[in-house]
Image 1 (cartoon, rainbow over the protein chains, first blue to last red):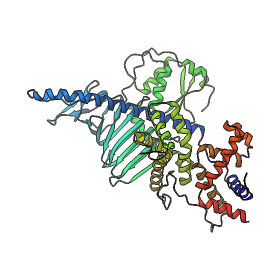
Image 2: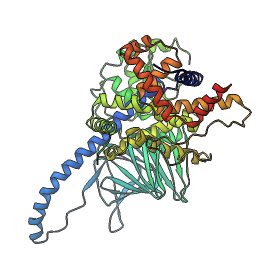
Image 3: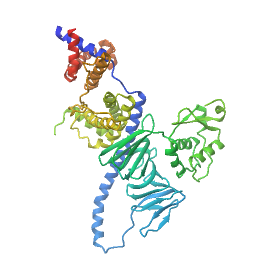
Image 4: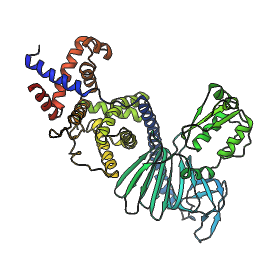
Length: 336
Length: 201
C-alpha cells in the first residue's frame, strides 16, 4: 500500500507523462520498408557467409593439391581468372593488352582479372559479373580484379537485381565502395567521386571513415567526395540525365515467352520506377505472354512492342517514381 | 565472459536473424527501430532526416551483425551506430554538435540538451521536457513504457490496460509499480526537478 508521499510522487509522474504525450512512432509504411530492407540485407550477408564456408572447405583440399603441384616441374603460368562477360557493347570498347595494343570487345567475350577496359568517346559497355549487371559509360577506364574493379575515370552503373547479386567493390581515388542490394552509379572525374543510389544502399570506405548512402522514402541520394576528402550528400532525382545513359547501355531483355507484366516490371526497374496498374483489368491483361523474339531489346523498344502487341498503355502519372499502366480504353478517360 | 540475461537474449535474436528467421527480423524491427528513430529525431529535429539516418543505421548494423558479441545490449549497440551517423549528418549539414555526444551510458543513450529555464519561451521549454520524458521512456523495457503511456497519457484504466496487453489486472498493478520505479531510476534529473517544482507550486 503506497504512502501519501508515494501518492504525491506518482501524481507528479502522472502529470509529467501526461504533459509529454505519446512518443512519436514511425508509420506502418516506414516500418514495412525497413523490414524489407533488413530482409534483403541479411540475405546478402547469409550468401556471403555460405561462400566463406565453401572457400574454407576448399582451402583444405587445395592445400593438399598444392603440395603435389609444387613438387611437379613448373608448367607455363595459367591465365588470370575470368571475372566478367560482355553482355552489351556499343561503339568503341576494348581491353588493353600487356603489349599496349587493344582488343575490341564483343558480346560474349570474357574479361580476366588484371585487364584494363577502355570505353571510347562514343562507346558503352555492359558486363555481367557474378550475377550483377554493370554498365559502363563512354570515356571510362577501369581495371578488373576478382570481386570488383578500380575506376580510373568515367562512370559506371550497377544493378544488383531483385535477388541482390554477389559482393562487388569499386575502388575510387577516395576510397572503396561496396553495396547492399541496390541500383547505384559511381563516377570519377579529376579525382572527385560522385556516387548516387536509387535503391538499397552503398558504403564508401574512405580514408577518414565510412560513409553510408541509402535511398530513402523520398527517393535517390547522391554523395560527392572531393580529392581533399570533403563529403556532401543530398537528395537527387531517381530518373533523368544522371541515370538515363545507363538504359542505353543495357544488354536488353529477350521478350519471347515472357508475360507483359514481367517485361513491364523490368522496364520500370530500368527506369528507377515502381510498376502500378490503374485497374485490375489492366493487371489481368498484363499476364498474357508476348510473342517476341529471342533477340534482346532495350527498355524503350520493349515498351513499343508491348504497346503495339497489347492494349496496355503507360500513362505519365503525377509521381515520377511510379510507372502507371492502363488499358487503351481506360487511357482515353484519363487526363493527366 | 558472463553476460547478463538480456544480452544473451539479444545474442540469440541476432543468431536467429542471421539464420533468416522472418519472425526474428520482425521482432528486431518492432523492438528497436522505433527507439532508434526517436533517438535520431530528438537530435536532428527533422522526421525526414531521422528516417534517412535509420535507413543508414540499418544498413550498417546488418553489415556488422556478425560482429555483435553481446557485450552490451543490442539497443545500446545500435545507438552507438546511430550516434555516429547523426554526428556525421549534422557535420555534413554544417550544424554544430555541442555536448550532445558525451560518452554513452550502458544503455546507449547520451545527454540531450534540456529545457533552458532562463528561456522565456515556455512552450519551447515544455517541448524539450517532453523530449526528455520520451527519451526516458525509451530506456525502459517496452512493456513498462507502454503501460505508463496507456495509464498516464491515454487515461486507460487498469482493466483496459490488462485487456490491451493481455495480462491480468493484478499483473498490471505490479507492472505499473515497477514501471514507475524504473522510470524514476533512469529518467533525466531535469525531469525530477521539473516534477518537484510543479509540486511546490
